Structure formats: C-alpha cells, structure tokens
Amino acid sequence: MAIPVLAANSYAAAQKLVEAGSITAPSSGGFSDLVTQSIAAFEGQAKHADQQMSNAISGHVDYVSAVTAVAETETAVETLVAVRDKVIAAYDDIMRMTV
Image 1 (cartoon, rainbow, N blue to C red):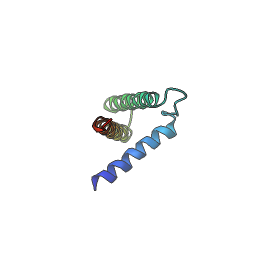
Image 2 (cartoon, helix red, strand yellow; image 1 turned 180 degrees about the vertical axis):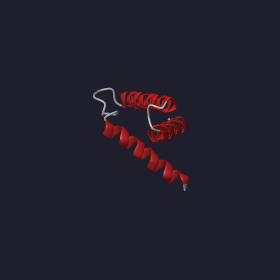
Image 3 (cartoon, rainbow, N blue to C red; image 1 turned 90 degrees about the horizontal axis):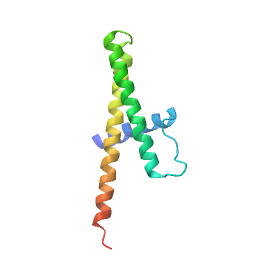
Image 4 (cartoon, helix red, strand yellow; image 1 turned 45 degrees about the vertical axis):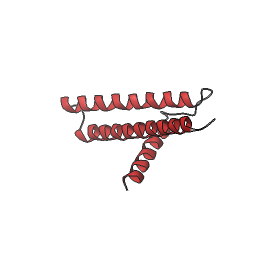
C-alpha cells in the first residue's frame, strides 16, 4: 500500500520540478545531464527550505511557508532515494546477466 503512495508522491514532485523549469530535456548529454540537473534542482530546493526556516525563526516569514518548503524538500528527498534505489536495482540486474 505504501509503494503506490510513494510512487504518486515521487511523480508529483518530479512534475513540480518540470513545471517550474528546474529540469529540462538534455540537449546532448543524455542521462548524465538529466541526473546532474535533477541533483542541482534538489540542492536548490533544499537551500530554499533552509532559508525559509531561517526566516521563520527570525520572524520574517510565516510558518506555513516554511513548513511547506520543508515538506516539498522531504518529498524531493524521497524521490531522489527512490530513483537511486531503481538505478542500483537496474545495475544489479545488468551485473547478473550472462554474456
């Protein structure tokens, strides 16, 4: 039951990144450029959440915005971990193939 929810959350997080323009189709590098862009987008989102929390603590931003930013970052972390797990599983499958 948790797998479909995780998949839906991961898809929603990826869709938000695409809609925001954080991730674009790679022009020539292929998969490695896509991974690099995704990690850069994740880092930007994490920095934004850190900034929102700092601003909330100092009283410059409301707590709802800060909590929303942290929740979005949590979803991004879950997505990143899910993609990493799938890449590792694919690598394991390739290593088990007979030549």
